[in-house]
Image 1 (tube, rainbow, N blue to C red):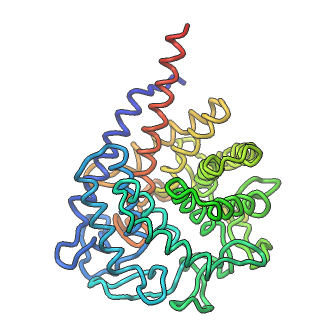
Image 2 (tube, one colour):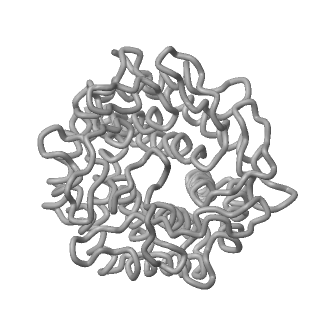
Image 3 (cartoon, rainbow, N blue to C red):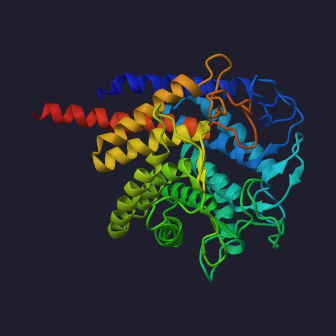
Length: 406
């Protein structure tokens, strides 16, 4: 397959701008501040919907990252709006951490301390610090990191407890969502702690943070990546005994590149080699979820294959398989990346109403879920565009240099 890299790059640049334009135009809450909490698939805004910390952190990350990539002042303005709202409404002034949600007026709603949500806040605030170099912004990220280490870190078995109460007390329901297992630890939370600490370490290269980052990578190598199938194990008890047999193809391919990025930041050559080897195995495992049309299926639970194709696994497939090609020179991965982009173009991008559909059912019908919500955000698809634009630039530059030396 001949893949037109320059055309692909142009398409991604256009799509990034299209995604950001949607969020700039429709999501600011001009009445109550910040951003609206929910927009339906037909762009109907629910002005009284709760506002989630994960959504707001992902908006902050995406627009800060877009500014850092393009230096467009309008993107920095949106990022600043997100930062100010998070600072004023989501960060708990009494006990630290961030609330899971606030109401449409910005008043605390669900005040539990979900480690996943705090990780996203750290990830986003570190990216915003890159854009602003504001010392107060960095101190906020460090305060959240300190709270995680003080209250959520399991010093006996290592890793992080899923969730705690507002005052960091134990709670009965640790689940991130109703579909998740109620277990002490999860792959998903640890993947995003890893992601957050990687971004934070890039602006604050602290020895203790480096040690924690290395520790989380070791947890993936020793417990989270299945030693035979190379899929990620999703849920665990406190002592890292597996509590799940479900496969999440989107998380597999997302982890395949995030793990290598984290190892590169740590800079330990042995760790880098071990993580790179496992990441290619994870990419091969994730590829078992690819349909003939290039789309990535959602998950497999036992013998039941869920053939829905949600927006975010497609975005992660574009980046993750391209990354696997960069680190293996296996052209099958390059084709998988490009085919995932072609599938998204044909089936996931909403050319009429903007943004991306939630996904497609097994029958190929559009899923009438949120365009904006607690989970629907510009992070996966926006980040995929930015990551791919950087990587395609590196690839085309390397090709040019190779030709120049022939």
